[in-house]
Image (tube, rainbow, N blue to C red):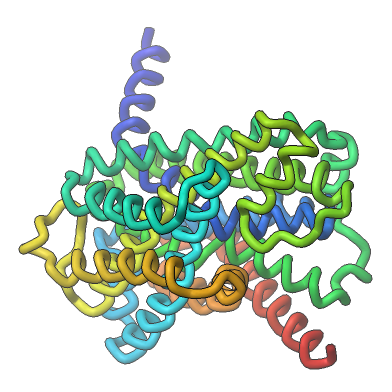
Length: 417
């Protein structure tokens, strides 16, 4: 009986704090992420599956650090950067995050447009309507209702797992490739390095750290509820990377095997699956893409508004009314309006470049965010007994050094090429 009561208490505590970690991790499988994973499978087959395990471990460590900082300090990441490192550094970082995140917002509206075009709907009708829906969800909703909508959207990612099963992959080969990295010769290929950085950047995007910590603070999670919040983070990270694994496997089993390597949009992967894996896989992939794009089109502008307003000292939060946080809501509105407008006005070839470069830039900028996080979380006067353990520091610093190394290798390879 005592065990049952303890288990019930833990479950209730987990349900009380679930949300920020699971939502943040899953929204990372957005239109840009789906395109990157689809390209990874279509261009290289199973050669990038080995990245999923180290990326998942790194994602868990980094997201846990953010949730811990939010619970212990009661402040967002950009708030802490401003207080500890000054306004000038914070302002420069906010400009960089704003530019990169805007590229990601455009990517989400491309995902909305192209996924619904698969069902015969014009982007000139669907993009404006979806932009209004996205705006209304956040601006007119309360924090709890908004979070419930986002949690429901997170579970729709199971469509990619089903699509992966329907693609009938080579399970044995995929499993071996997950645990066995390719030969060093692969890392001399500029395209392969570019894709590795893209996969890292789309899985551990800079915006995630700011959004997660802000969400933990707004939800009111403190040291007392942190253990349950940690479980929320771990569950979200594992689930989102299982979905990513299935996307790569599905495209490797169909597009790579049949020589279909030219994917410009995530919707191209869904279109190509139709004759290769059947109508069900095609529909599941297309519906998953629409859900992911609409979901991320809400979160990414929200994350950007949180980050910039916290960093520059403006009021922010979904729990506040428009009049209480005007800069926060106006920035959110402008990002949505501008992102939707660009998708309707800019030619397709230019949009493809925005999609690809936004994911790679995520990977290039990530080390700068991680360095600030590591400096903050190891400050005893800030975190007290909740500073990083030696293991967490080792994983986080190794991730930072590795990404910098890959970026330099890719830059060197590009210059030589």
